[in-house]
Image 1 (tube, rainbow over the protein chains, first blue to last red):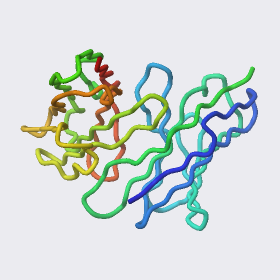
Image 2 (image 1 turned 30 degrees about the vertical axis):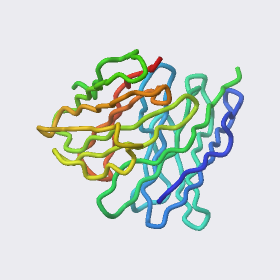
Image 3 (image 1 turned 90 degrees about the vertical axis):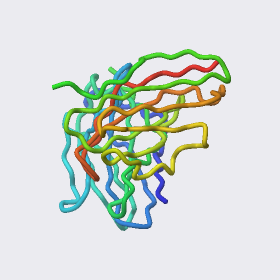
Image 4 (image 1 turned 90 degrees about the horizontal axis):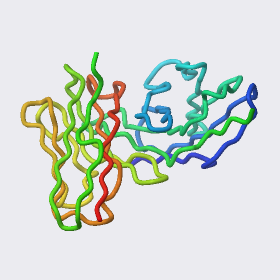
Length: 115
Length: 113
């Protein structure tokens, strides 16, 4: 079984500041890792994913994340926050082998951008 | 092209009633997933279809929940004898297969009174 822990249910940053959203996972097999964003009254949208290969993954809207196996982490960063980044962010994990493909999500982090 | 669609967008029912929630995946997507999102929580996996068969139904909470995908496209999630604790947003997603990006629909908000 796998699990995801997102540290901080709410994160507040100033516009233009660094965004760092933390995600740690637990998985008994090599994981696939994802970050999704959910804007108010909209569906979940994939920001980026790690499956294999390069551990630094770049996504949409200037976000990136680094898979660190030794730390079991997949933290999401963006160098400069924009007001439009305000949303709920979810980290998720699935397993790379076997027949299962469902995502296990963290509880989410609400990102607040201060003007 | 059209994304994942779900109907109805909202469903209000009474405790003990039966409900059906429908998902239309993106055309050509062989994999389909159902999730449930309670207020303030992340989505919780329910079931995953590959084609017409349920490849993984380990997330269904009990035997009141059942899902079908008879022709490998549209799927219906069926909930019998609804309980107030079933109130949540039910999300459907589809993808081209295992490990590929899952595209989510807007969800059906189910309220059990």
